[in-house]
Image (cartoon, rainbow, N blue to C red; front, side):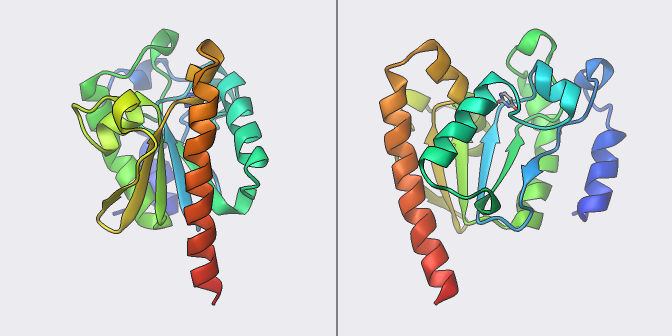
Length: 189
Ligand code: URA
């Protein structure tokens, strides 16, 4: 496993898949590197590719609103993606691309050691939880694995397309906030 400096250098020099050929910037993550919770999306979009930061476009604005609305402070989370380079035209990453990039995400999890991992959408759920599960079926339920509490929920971009998912995602985040509070209380006592 790499330390942060080595990991960033490895990502910046990574051309293991074709996404490396078209990216403007590597998008590794943002937030507290000692956070108790990690949020994982799919891959960078246009704005993320330009700025080199995850979730800074329309979906990111919505995610920030959700986290603020839930009163989850910024120092409690770190945000990353399954792939670190933008797939052309924002298509879903291929299995090969995701598998090639996953060791970097595992390395981030190793460094951050979060207690909670929130999978934002089907792609994150697929590579973190279960290749064959359906997000509509497993969202909102905790999965305990290897000491991590994993919560699959919708991708914020899905809310932009389908308003009816808002209430469900809000409910999922209520459960996240509840567990986060429990963990933080235990850590401080
Ligand atoms: N969507 C994602 O899945 N990740 C981002 O960083 C931005 C949009």
